[in-house]
Image (cartoon, rainbow, N blue to C red; front, side, top):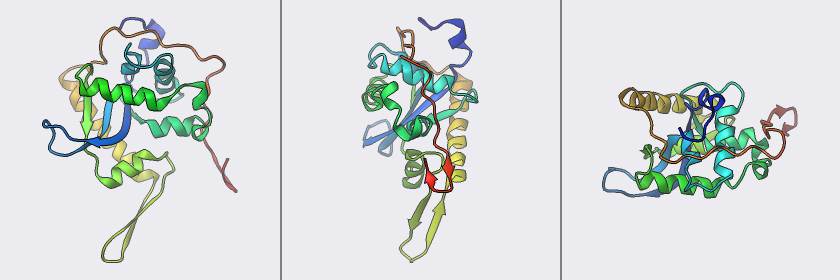
Amino acid sequence: MAGLDDGDRECVEVYLLTLHEPYEEARHPVPINATIVHAATLLHPLVPQPDGGRMYRCLTEFPDRSAGCVVPVSTLTYELNGGQLWGAVGDWERVTDAVVTLARADRCDAMPLGLPQVSAALLAGGPHTTLTMHHPDGTSTEYGGADRAERLRELEGHVRAFVARAPFWPGDGLVTPAPFAGPRPYRPYQPDAHGWH
């Protein structure tokens, strides 16, 4: 990939999951409300920079990120102190809008998804999301972090199957990711006795 040094190449097999307003397309039988792209798509010249490059660094440099993992934008928000540190990274909404536009224009490989309501709700929230679904018969079902993790494992399986056929193309003309102005801004929310801090 143009613009990436050897240190960056060691950690690029990470994928971004962005949830967005549903759109319909003839190629897909259901409305598309989520898209998975290779992390390096954030380095595409049509993605706002330096924001995209800094999001790329958050995706690939966060400690303990495993190769082949799918990282929702909501996970980045959690890792950036519940979103309070996005200012040190960039405008994630502009970046993800640009990524979805690239994907829809076939300017990169992408996995468009029509996620069911429960999956979309879990993945739109952070790792400690809890969700209660109320059913017409008066019963309810509780979902939590383990359910969210299971849905991510399923998506990672789909990505592995895709990559087994061909590499996930992030697009052409990729730029070098911009450095952070200061130290890396990771500070995951941690639960304490009084809730989140």
